[in-house]
Image (cartoon, rainbow, N blue to C red; front, side):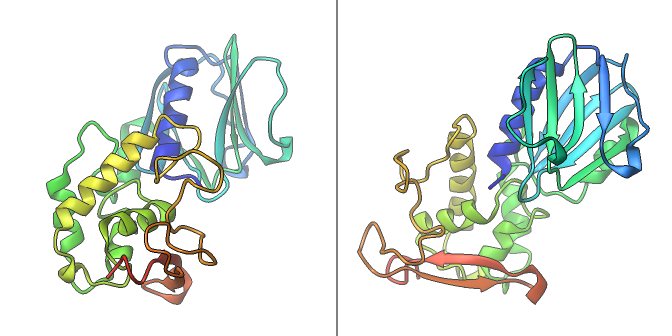
Length: 259
C-alpha cells in the first residue's frame, strides 16, 4: 500500500532520471489535461510531501497522489512496461528514460508559482527536510478526545503515515487504536517512533516492521486478524474506526499488548 515511504522513494527515482533533463515527449491520459504538451521543457525539481508528489517543469507543476493503487515506474526508453497500458495516466520521456504514472488517484497540472497551495493543508512531513516533531505533536493533541489511530492518520496533523504504518506503530507503542489522544502517556514518543519507522523503510523495496523481510513475517498486526500476537500469543483483533462511516479504516491490535 502506498504510504509516505513509497512516495519518497518514487520521488527519489524520478529525480534521478528527470531532474535537469529535457522532456522529449509527454502524454497525459486524463481528460482535464489531455491536450497539454510539455515536450521541450526541462524538469527542474521532483519533490515529495507526505503522500503527494510534485514534478516541476517550466511554469507547470505536475501534482500526483498515488491513493490506493497508484505507482510511478521508471524505464530505459524503449523497454516494456510492467503494468498494463490502460492503467497509464501520464508518460514523460527524456532522451534516455521514460517515467510512467500508473493508476494515479490524483493527477493535475498546477501553475508552479501556486503549487504549494495544494499542499498547505498538510501537517509536517515526516520525511521532509523541515520535519517539525513539536508541531506534529501539537496538532495531534489539539483534539484530545479523538482516537489516537485517527489523529495519526490525519494528514493535516502529520504527513506520511497511512493505515499500515499507524496499526504497526500503535502496536510497537503499546497503545490500543481506540484510546483517546488525551490518554496516551507520551504522544511525542509515538510520533518520533513513526518518523523513525518511515525513515528506515524509505530505502527498502519491501517494508518491514518486525526486522524480518521473510514473506509473512514483516508485520506485527496489520492484516493479521486471524493470527496470534508474535509476542504474547493472544488472538489478534480487528475493527473499524472513522470520524464518519464513509471514512472508516481497518484497525488491527493485540488486546494484551495494547491497552
